Length: 168
Ligand code: SF4
Image (cartoon, rainbow, N blue to C red; front, side, top):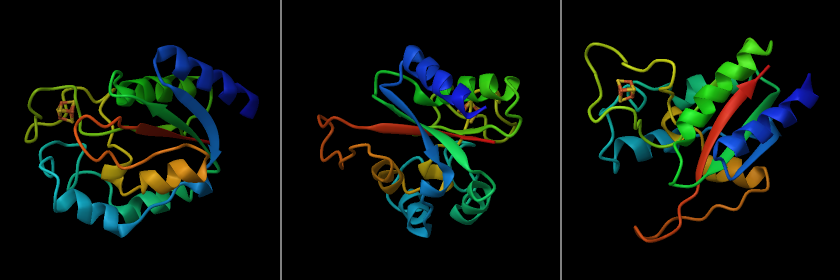
């Protein structure tokens, strides 16, 4: 079945990802400081159902990651909605027989102008917590898998976006 995953990487690139790579799940790093960064310093904290405190904690995510052997890491730019690509690919991978496929997106949810915080998600098929909102150290995870990622120091800096699909 693992040979099929290369095909899903090609699909991700066709959908707009810059790169997509099959990775070992054990290379995904979770850390408690990631949650602190969300809570103190990000104006998106509490603003949508895919962000803390609604998203999985680093501890929960670490336990989830430990249940998988493989993932697909997607790299994208600000020109594509990488969360949409990951969620749509999650569905395709699931339908191909990998019934445990789950996706983590990138950045704050962009599917609504304002989140439907009190009545539930309007787009459950597409909305996914970002890697970082679920406590993943995106920098270390990307570097562990050969991707280049640097801190964007100003609004004009090129930013790198990553999304993840765990596959089993
Ligand atoms: S899709 Fe809309 S309702 Fe659902 S988490 Fe995103 S912003 Fe909130």
